[in-house]
Length: 67
Image (cartoon, rainbow, N blue to C red):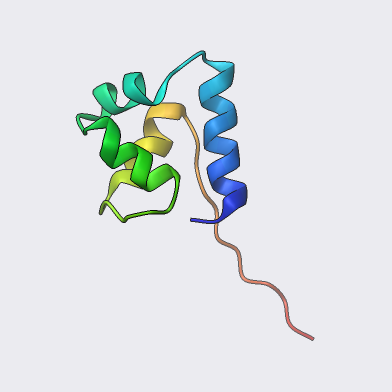
């Protein structure tokens, strides 16, 4: 994921006063796995989808019109 997406996820967590440990518990993963995912030190398959779902976020991919 891009830094922009990571920043949005972290911002939503701050707005909800949610720690990484609390989000990890809701997702059923270890705090370390979530930390690795949020800081791009590792890849946890499917975890991004779960993070977005838990925080009520969605990612949209759109084709850029080329000239």
